[in-house]
Image (cartoon, rainbow, N blue to C red):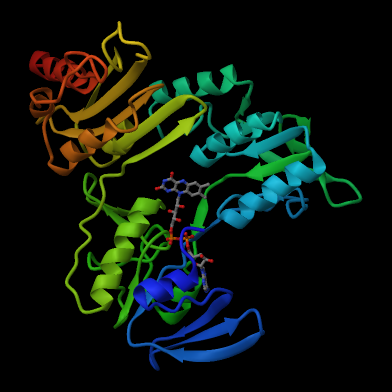
Length: 395
Ligand SMILES: Cc1cc2nc3c(=O)[nH]c(=O)nc-3n(C[C@H](O)[C@H](O)[C@H](O)COP(=O)(O)OP(=O)(O)OC[C@H]3O[C@@H](n4cnc5c(N)ncnc54)[C@H](O)[C@@H]3O)c2cc1C
């Protein structure tokens, strides 16, 4: 949709082969086995350098009835089109979403816009359970205000189907729910089978381990994107963070180096943003639990402030939680939720994390002020100042 194979050819002389599946990598002979799906023909194609960018696939729960034809996952455009066609054709009234992550939440909005009664089944007691409680509670409130039923501590057990192989009832270990369609949004699995079979090393997360030049352990084979791990600069650990901006940056580094360059992808601090109905949610760095796990002496500061001067039209309250190391005041993470000005604000804290700044240094930053954009003190500066005071007061 963004660019066609013809445009790739005309603009950059790149041959894009759609409908071609790679079925084997032979690193000894430096060749790949490719099936042309349109003709069902298989051939070996030689390479000088290879970049593996096979992405990730949606995880599916393996339960009785889980292959029914009204159970969907959402990973690519085709999945989205299938879901839309099903809604347009069958006019379902009730949908069950399994999972409480950001894809589940974004789909709540899409389903509610189509007037579907929406049930979210979540193992944890709050949505996006790896976010801080204060943020997840705001998300829950937004879901409930928009008519979403959020059901916690449900362990999925069974899908009861009718004669047309459609789920009609979703059963958990607690109760049964009549549903007309199901979305499984329970995470992704990196597509690493081809790489693994060829002898490419995987990391502890199960995704491909590369060095910072996106090189794998095998000569002339690079990897990038959702199939790979990425280095987290705050925790100093390799993690699997399947996000589009990371995939893009890793891809550029892998491409440049495959062409003989010396590019380096230093890593990420772990920033992301998403929207749940009118609520913007954004975070960067580590949460409290993760920070503790990595051995930091963790403390936090929560504040609520206006997104712009209170008398300006459209000003909205936002919540900010700053997470920092009590020992030296270094910022370790930040999470925000609010209905205005949240998603872009997180980027300044991502910069602070990259620079290993302290709370005190952040509180003294020279942010721009004008009433339509922020209060005299930006909410981030207020949060940092409060946190700095807390550090000064602590023994
Ligand atoms: C609903 C949704 C919303 C998202 N929103 C955001 C967002 O707001 N921000 C963000 O940063 N990220 C977001 N993401 C994540 C983002 O889409 C991914 O991180 C990104 O697409 C990863 O790019 P990739 O190239 O590594 O993998 P993919 O985009 O998955 O591409 C992998 C490609 O490899 C192909 N392939 C796999 N195996 C083979 C094979 N054997 N032979 C040939 N081809 C093969 C696949 O068909 C696919 O085309 C979202 C994802 C979803 C599903």
